[in-house]
Image 1 (cartoon, rainbow, N blue to C red):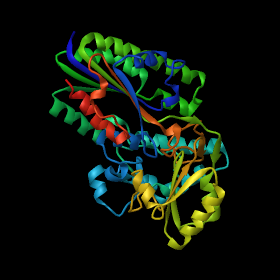
Image 2: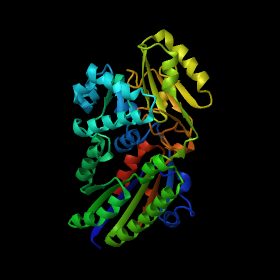
Image 3: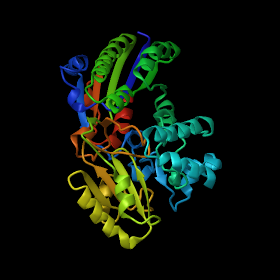
Image 4: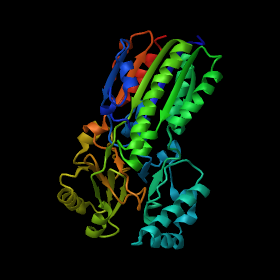
Length: 417
């Protein structure tokens, strides 16, 4: 035994809860059959991994942390600029937003030919690689006219998130524990874990934070339950078993928390929200941001808002939920996504499960096949956490009910000794 205690938090992005069963994950299911194990389903927030991760790491809802999406409309509250370092794309390279360059980009973006539109995405990708000095989100489908209207955070991956840094320091300082992060792919986890254990062998207490995004990546491109997706799920299942067996052998006490932030389903319909808005509304009275399953509309003419809400209600009936920022304030607050300064507009449009927006601000040429980021009451948006232990019963810590309670649940498990 090399360690007094070894703890693992394994974050598996986009693992649908329904696949945790003997058919698809026999190794994990066999571990769950042990006496010292339990599984908890968790209430989620609307949206994607960026906001979920920030809530998990901070214990704060998005409206408290201002981390919901990796972008936002420019708000009146300018303190956000200094607190989180958010910038517009134009801040990184004003040339990109110059009138001449933007008009040239518009020709590519608005072309009827897919190959020409693809060239637009290539140009923005090349620009990001050369000029942008941050690791923020890449919006390769954003219309040129929106480049200067949106702010993006200067980080995207979880280990770059300042809440991760704060959480890591809290664990190291208060619990006297060595903390390591491995991500983002399964292959990197497999390759780096032995080296990490060797590096940390002088520590008596070790906490390993693992992040695996293969299911999310493959699902988006090749669909959920495709052959490649199922092969990856099988490999992840075996990796969980291997990690459990290996670390149980090197630690007198070993605890494992396996977390998934949401599920995913294959798209059954795509909605061209951009064309709907541009064909029905006069230019200059609104701005919009279209994500894969969420869209945000900011109105500059208040008298038109009711008309837009009615239009969306009629055209998207049965396909999406539509929220008025003020009219639906209570339900948005309940789910932690009420932003009073219009950081996410005056109207929020949330698709129903397996329906997505295309084109969107990520791509104008390639639809996402697998989708997530739905309303928390939908089963496909279900988050969950598995607790495994070689000695101490996992029932000693208060069971988490919501993803914002995961941080305290992790700290409790780490402090059991």
